Image (cartoon, rainbow, N blue to C red; front, side, top):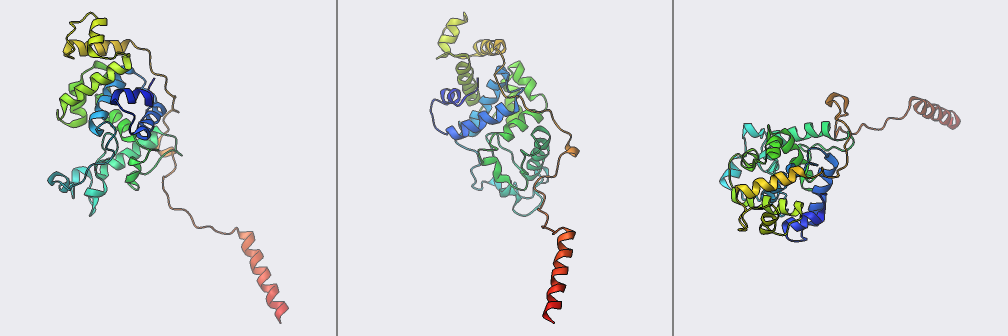
Length: 269
């Protein structure tokens, strides 16, 4: 079962428990395919690298040369002055650019209950708050073509390419996968796992050891997660963050007010 305690074991500390709890709640609330141990291990390995083990939920802003280049980028949907910084990367797997914040919103009004949704384009800081932390993780995994399939295949190289666009930090991601898989399989070390599975006991997690970890995760029962309601059509959902309508007195109340005013005038004569 995915718990804060399991994430403590993976990270090797009890820091950032509010963020860990937020991710647990978000993944549990969404359900499949994050109830599949083999999928979850791959996703968590990416989360650990991308967020520095929950240390970062917001892109560290310099701005660097690359970050300065966010401004005015049409492919990110940054069309208004200040969009570059306004829509910097947020969440444990970062959502960057106005267009992505808009897409994230549109996707979540389908995936979540209508009353459990926020307009991330209107309120980008929401992705840093505990109640929505992890939303971009779910959205990213569910909308990137073949990402979940690569998770199920144990193809961490292709999972990394889908998340990163390349193989930046690949060795670190492999290390986090090892820690995550071992924790989920209840092994204290690579050596312990190798010995239990008839592998050469050298303490090195190479392709054979990692493939055996993946096979063991595939053999595990699904995680116990909360089942979410079925998706609702976008057109059936109410608009989010619509401006509040001004209060209007009922017609009967308005008539009564006019009558009272006339009577007061007549009494004054």
